[in-house]
Amino acid sequence: MKWSIHQLSKYRQTGMPIDTIIQLDDVKKRNQEIRDIAPVHVKGHSTIGQSQMTCQFTMATTLTLPCARTWEDVEYPIEVETVEVFSWIDKELRGNDDEDIHYIDGEVIDLTPVLEVLILLEVPMQVFKEGTENTVKGGKDWSYSTDEDESQKVNDEPKVDPRLASLAKFFDQTDE
Image (tube, rainbow, N blue to C red):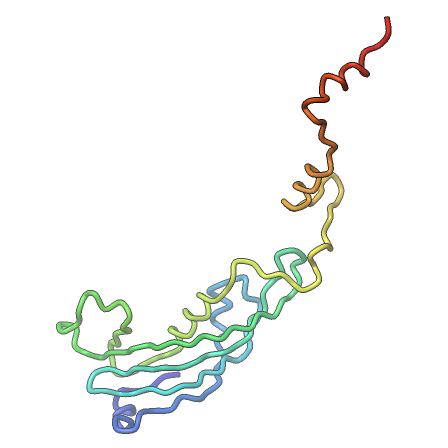
């Protein structure tokens, strides 16, 4: 999604609608966990001023990620609403504290890198496929347990009343 600044000047009065579907396969190169990405639907509106463009849009897509338990494919839908500001003001007039503005060097505004970053920020640390909660219990020479399993084991052990502890020692003695 690229626009020249000259091309955008005709939308100064009315703004420019955005409704397009693009393919962002380069996201898979930037994050190896992303196995596939569906076409991204970008819909919104942008307003164009003298030296900046403000885009308010929603983007939606589906990522294919590996399950953290079984390594199978999991489809993970994402939808992001955002407002992005692009400015082509001279370098001498730019402020130092404008972190939310994308400054443009040249005559072309490219929205693709911004969309890629927004997608990468939405990738979760782990995803789990439905129905895999109790599938992995162990293997040869190892086992899997959760904190809930461990707390259940502690609760299942019979507890001796401290007042009767000396009585339990009485029965453990052997007759001599």
